[in-house]
Amino acid sequence: MNMLWRFHLLWILLSRADSFSVTVPSSPILVVRGATELLRCEFEPDYNISNLVITWQRQEDLRVVHSFYYEIDQLDRQSADYSGRTKLNHKELAEGNASLSIANIGLKDAGNYMCIVNNRKGTGKGVVQLVYTAFCSEPRLSILLKSTDVTVQYEMEGYPKPEVMWLGSEGQNLTDHLEVSSASDGGLYYLKSSYITQSPVFNVTFTLKNPPAHQEVQRHFNLSYDGNMSSSRSVVVLSVLCFFLLCSTGLLLWLYCRVRSIHTGLM
Ligand SMILES: *[C@@H]1O[C@H](CO)[C@@H](O)[C@H](O)[C@H]1NC(C)=O
Ligand SMILES: *[C@@H]1O[C@H](CO)[C@@H](O)[C@H](O)[C@H]1NC(C)=O
Ligand SMILES: *[C@@H]1O[C@H](CO)[C@@H](O)[C@H](O)[C@H]1NC(C)=O
Ligand SMILES: *[C@@H]1O[C@H](CO)[C@@H](O)[C@H](O)[C@H]1NC(C)=O
Ligand SMILES: *[C@@H]1O[C@H](CO)[C@@H](O)[C@H](O)[C@H]1NC(C)=O
Image 1 (cartoon, rainbow, N blue to C red):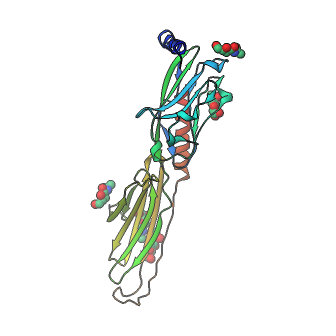
Image 2: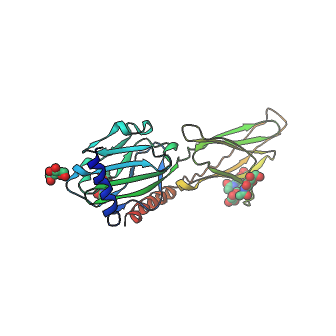
Image 3: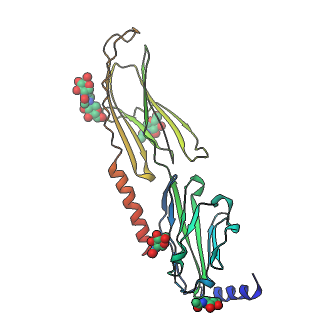
């Protein structure tokens, strides 16, 4: 940057800071693993974009997510973490729209993004917060029969750590055994939860909740065995009743919340 340009920026900062507005969603945006997300940012438009400088930057460590000036994307300034994943719609810039799309969202993308805009009308910034989540995978069921007991087990992956519980027919907490491995680089927790019983008849409900994604899963079990538990040749009759409510209502609620947060944010 030459001195004149620097002076120009400083002058903009001093003289227009109060009147220039940059608008971003006020509530956090829930982003889903693997998705392409639009980070909305709007500013007072100027038809002539030759003086426009847009910088999307992480607030935590000032990594450059996307930079635009001299009417082009300045990709050599971009952090390698965002290389090839960001897109600014150049056609919208003259309309005052600096919204940035980020593809292939991962755990490390969670955090705060500053949208900093300079043009002839002024300079300003807004901060967009991304909250990362991953829909829990369909729980995988396995039933292990031994001569002494039965183990019903579910395995799944999600983020953040899903809340799982086993409930008895009267709603009592039967949560027995839970194994959790920490979130891997892929941004997922692996979870294994089992219920072990010696009873030949049992009625339990497995529940899974992933509140940020408004995801709830419920499985009802009504199992009974026929025969002698100690005999390895006992005939086992399993009547497994699985009603799953991988709530489409949950998904709708989630979509509704997202749409609402975007709208309220821009009003
Ligand atoms: C836009 O602004 C630049 C620099 O201020 C100027 O040189 C250019 O002529 C302007 N373009 C239009 C179309 O007004
Ligand atoms: C801003 O640009 C994005 C990306 O092209 C677009 O999806 C969005 O609708 C635009 N916002 C407005 C208010 O026009
Ligand atoms: C099993 O439990 C569910 C509720 O968890 C209840 O509605 C159902 O009647 C129970 N069935 C038996 C056989 O106890
Ligand atoms: C159910 O029991 C498990 C294991 O004892 C415990 O970790 C969990 O917090 C309990 N959940 C509730 C809702 O009481
Ligand atoms: C559960 O299984 C028992 C025994 O097989 C049966 O009597 C009962 O009706 C079943 N309950 C439900 C809710 O299906």
